[in-house]
Image (tube, rainbow, N blue to C red):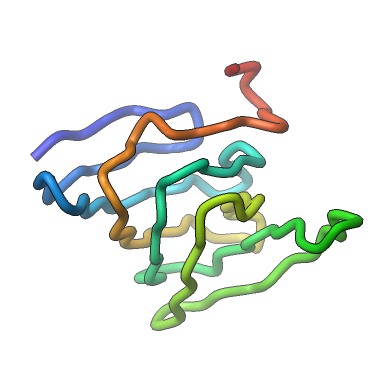
Length: 116
C-alpha cells in the first residue's frame, strides 16, 4: 500500500495489478483536483464520505456543469471526459476510485497548484 501526499489532500493506493488500480482519495474541505482528462485511463468512483462536487465539461461547446455526489453515489469517467473532483460543499471528501493502470495519464487543463 502506498500513500501519496497531494496539495489537495492525499491518495492511498490499496490495490495495483497489471489490469487495475484501486485508490482511496481524501480531499480536504475547500480543495479541488485539476480540471483534467485522461487519454486512456478509465475510472469509476464511489463516494464514501462527504459531498463531492464533480465538475464536467461535455459536448462540442464544452459546456461546464456540476453534479453533486453523496455517500453511496457512483460515477464512471470514460477516457477524454474533462472532469474535476472538488470538496466545496463544506465537508472533507473520501472516495474510492477503481481505474485502469495508466496512473500518469493526466492532462491538466487548469490547476490551482501550478502543476503541469
